[in-house]
Length: 166
Image (tube, rainbow, N blue to C red; front, side, top):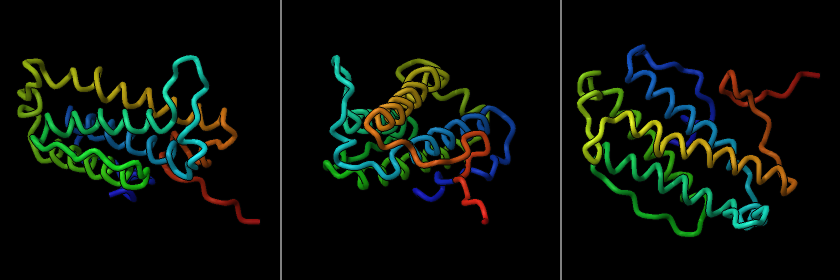
């Protein structure tokens, strides 16, 4: 599932609310993929200080937010990963892909009818999905501060940057 999020150049076939949610999930997976690609153990332990989480803590928090959505959409909770970043990334990408597949499989009315803790699914967007995007941005910023910037990629085009032919 990880490779699905390396490049998100295939657009959802739907242009309804489901398609928008699918693309949001693609965007989160893509951003998280590149924010965490090539992290070192030094990066995982880094915090800029002042009560900020470490990069590893942030990655774990993003995992928890995605797991929350996965649990509420699919009724299945993931098993928290060991301290191994790659295992956690793989689980996160599998959960995101499963959420995306679920949203793709249901009709728009079923999405509108989805209730989470008595509230419409829209709260998933302004809550855990937006929070996950914010924390993914923190991971990218913190690793840059730590001297290991995110590998180059095209954020607008949503694919990895190809080396220029010389």
